[in-house]
Image (cartoon, rainbow, N blue to C red):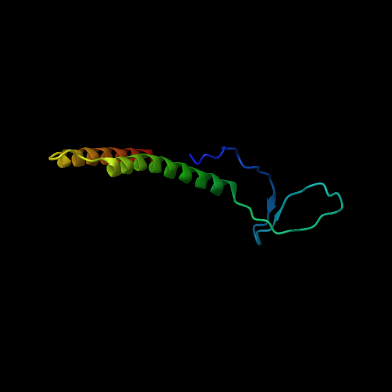
Length: 102
């Protein structure tokens, strides 16, 4: 999670020209209209980006925990190989879970 509240972005329906791409959204005019340049994102592309972000956050959490343990682990004398193999097993499980979730 990013720590931000997860609210759906405001959406609206509009007309888009299939030739030039101009977007028009009908609104009642109150007589003081001015055109200004804005940027829009196609809703399906936005939703796909959010799904990729969620996948990346899950991967970051899974692999981040492994990296923290690796950085903080100090095996006892003569036990480095057992610790290394345990971390290898944990890494393999984490990678398998990530592949299964993809």
